[in-house]
Amino acid sequence: MIMKKQYMYALSAVALLFPSVTFAAPRTFNELANLIVTILDTGTGLLILGGIVVYFWGISTNILKMKDEGSQAFKAYFVWGLIAIFVMFSIWGIIEILQNTIFGGDYYDPSGGSPAQSGGGGPSTQFPVFGE
Image 1 (cartoon, helix red, strand yellow):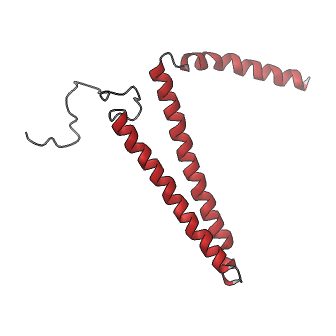
Image 2 (image 1 turned 135 degrees about the horizontal axis):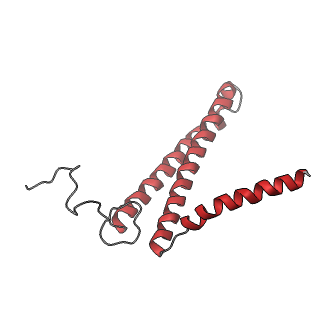
Image 3 (image 1 turned 180 degrees about the vertical axis):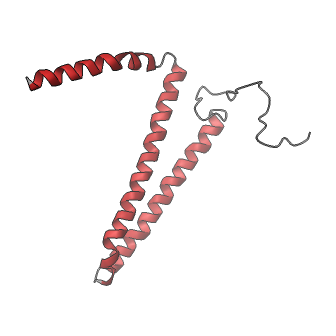
């Protein structure tokens, strides 16, 4: 009886969510590329967040053990942890620069060429225009 009830809940959830999955499917290569870039960007952010959490958890659990005999090993782990966080942020920044230069400046438009502009197609008013 319980199994049948769970089966009915799962079936109703699939029936309710199926249209949203169908309409969310990418129709063009550009939409597919945007979806992949969005997923990778979210995953990168989550990995960096996880690395920072693990680093500070390691510091908080091992800070009281610094007076023991293995304090040099703990200090080395702390330094290498900082270096790893710096490298993660640096790689993320390099990827951002490549996305802005290769994909024309629009963050989620990997079709290349010119940036996708919203509005009249003129320069953005958020930055000063020199020479006018």
